[in-house]
Length: 170
Image 1: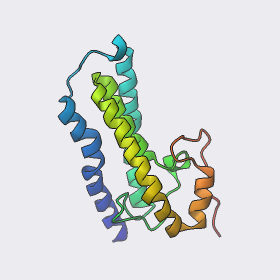
Image 2: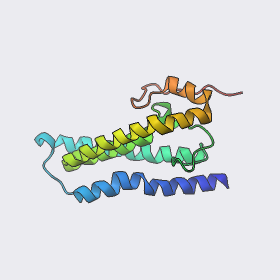
Image 3: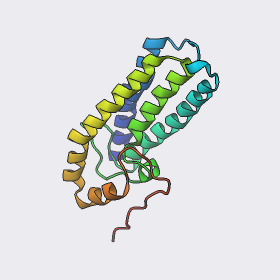
């Protein structure tokens, strides 16, 4: 029952947060209409598509890990029971936030719209402030030394090339 509620809660939060931030808001700003490519380089659109294609599966995978392994959601009102340190979390501590920003910046490059670059930068700043002021202290108080070990080995924003492996318990 706990897993079912975690999956449903994560799915609902997925629709409320990333779909609005990386879908509805960019669409409302651009109507997904193409402007001239950044700096006149059509190749920038390909980079944009690549950012979107990398961000989307990472976003979905990270949400699934919260529900299936963490037995909770990414939403602060329904947190996980277990610290999630698998998948992309072995490379970087905040893959959901990075994926959302990558998708927005990808759309900026694809559609040639500087307003989305600004949106991506402002969202990253908001995410950073939230992570530092609320999320990390909460995880520290919830998971203690397990979270400390994780933070000591996995960076907040810059991914590790070689994935970190959590020590096996017991």
